[in-house]
Length: 432
Image (cartoon, rainbow, N blue to C red):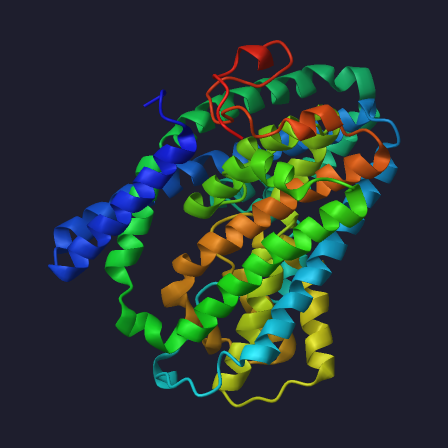
């Protein structure tokens, strides 16, 4: 299998998963559907297992690493600014597409069966949920937002303490290396995980279920495609004077893994390696990528909530005005950290619906197809997380343009760290 490029392995898993899914659905093979569900579920579970230690150690190390970055505060502010700019453009695409396609108009669904989801988001819950009551509980419950808060505070404190904190920082670096090594093993299982996830989706969601939501599903995919293939290339050309084809060649392994894994955090090691391969300085990438993996969500927190809010409003017969659309944009830009890089965007959706005063039961109408939507949403998230540090580095004059122009000419997925000492000994070149 090591002789087969990783992207081809993913594609094979995708094709085989679709075939097995159709076989299971056509012949009502419940045992095969259950097996596919178990395989895919175990893959996602393994990714989630690494999330708490990965997020905490990565952010602590990234905050401390800012000590060696010139103009660190300016870089951090510019990163946040571009996060906001691209999120605003993405949510504008979502709103525009929603107004153009009217995804909920004429849709007939059983509203009596739409129940409020158990997990909901509100501004009060979001703000009070940032600070944990028990730091251990944040890790036990896997509350990524609270873990991010703890990591930023601890990293900032270690940065200010200086030399006395070096043993603690060294410990975090060691734990991060160990977690990433274990996560690379999990990532190597992505072709098998793809088979299970896609196969179960095909077996579980037939046309009878998807037909009433076909217009909405298409709108989400088209919206993400516009951001991926139009907005991001324009940003690369206009803001960074960069060739978009080279960007996608370098970032493609991370985007591909995000599509099948549906986890921005789980994809983070691949995203960081891709960003570094694109020529972004490691010191800056080690800050921007972990930060983006937990807060930069153009798919889950911008395009999807905008379209979903319009869909729910139309299904329930609620008129949305200009103020409501401005609120959608505000929630998307400011509240995206609520998605926290995990699979699904339910918290962000309910946060948007509650802000607009729309029925939270509307979120229940979309839960059935959420895994189908989450694939393209997460791929868009990760592409944006790779885009911003690349653009910022280009504008700051720190991007290695030679590395950028050669990005994508080597196999990216391998179990070894891609540092300067080993980079030349990585896998054999593959076609650009």
